[in-house]
Image 1: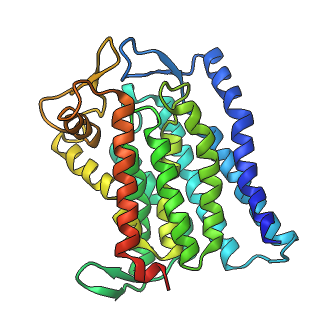
Image 2: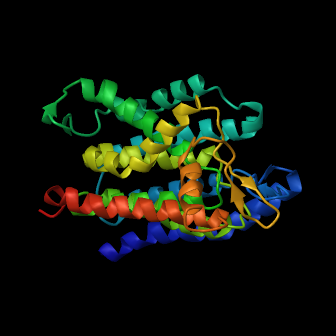
Length: 338
């Protein structure tokens, strides 16, 4: 009966396939459009398409719970409780992200402090059920028992940290979506290898929805994800790491985002990730210094190419992320291949 578990994944896939084009059409009719800053004429693109991805994902996961309940005869247990808690975290952050989208990044949106505060509060559903395992592996210290500090400190920091940092590396067609596909696919594999196949199904529901979204979001984009999607992806990544007890692996996979935040801090979090688009579609560095991984990618690619285009930057970052994931398989093979 396990092949039935493909149905929730397919449902997330088909719902996004059916309703995303309708969302794009409605955004154009309603004027809910954003400028594509890496294009020479800054064409308008449908905004906040992530709302379709999140809803499709949620419905797929709920259908998975229905299969567990009515076909596999699994009553409300620890796993179902974990799933509902994770969905609550994602939905809270989706509302925060959509609010930020509607207020508009050009007008400041929600303040950084308020967003961080809301991200910390969003972790409450996982905190109150004492999700995860309080014994964690720390660099140089090995396994450490954190006790009550884990739900009170580690969980909210993990959720808020993943949510906000994932949102930093953005602004290029297909970048946030493709990164989500790579990272969540990898963490779904990790979940399966570490004995958490239910987490793999949840991750696969998001990946299925993101795959459809990617074809509309890749260059040249017809729709943007918005903070509603980046916040939700970041929350799912952190939630999978907490519930699957593979925080170290998730932190390692997040190396590109640690690089991003360190570069963004050099610009006091005020420098944009965009390049300067030329009439031929190529990009130039927007600043004299490097203030983000996209800037660093343009800088490196220009050492090998006379002209660098938006797609080049996105594929370069994808390649870096895939390498990080492959290295993680080697470094953490003892934890994965038992």
